[in-house]
Image (cartoon, rainbow, N blue to C red):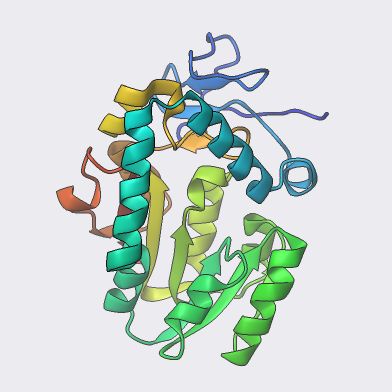
Amino acid sequence: MGENIRSCPACGNDNRAAAASPYSREHWRIKTCSACQFVYLENAASYDELVSEFAWTKTKVEERERKIGKEPTLLKAERKLRRLRRRAFGYNDKALIFLKAFVPQGEFLDIGCGIGGNIERAAPDLRGSGIELDANAAAEAQKIAQSVGGQVIHADALSGLRQLPDRSFDAVMMRAFLEHETQPRDVLEQTCRVLRPGGYTVIQVPNFGCLNRRVRGSRWCGFRFPDHVNYFVPDSLRGMVTGAGLRIAQFRLRDHLPTSDRMWMVAQRPA
Ligand SMILES: [Zn+2]
């Protein structure tokens, strides 16, 4: 299997000589950058391998089974309660709420659009297009995008973005995406390029700095091998986004509370 050895995606430092973090698993090496403390998977799988051998849906199921097997009864009960609550009150999808609040109408691009759920839910006010790595998902999403006047590109994020013209979207959605991307800074720079000046990007990623990760350690839901390759904390997310030429439009404490496993940011291409 071909290995893709990465330098720190945040600062570019080569950490090959540094010891692997205890969160590493099997032959997957998690590194904490010795220069900037960013946490990332050093030997990421290539896009092709992710698609074939490590299909996200499959690893998701395997991880879930592994965690449940290890979980004490109390945590199982908690999980059940959370599921019941979600069923009763509906899924609180902050990323979509922020997208609609900042960009009530226009054209948006969903990076890592899956089968097109966001495109469907954002219609009809927002006309959605997408980029998706998985061929089957991209074909499904394309049906939905077509019905609202958008299009879905079947590609990895970076080559997909490079096919799109400058200043062509009012919004770009990255929900549960950046943690998967081996070149997150390049993707953010391309995002800035395809946004119209004043346009917004909504980002949702797991928060590696959350309490749950500290308590659960390697059982934390944010660990997924090998498809989660970047482990952001609020400061590193802020740094990478602004480093790509975007400005932070919304990143309040309640958008990155340590009590939540995830965090949400809205960033803007300067007008
Ligand atoms: Zn670094």
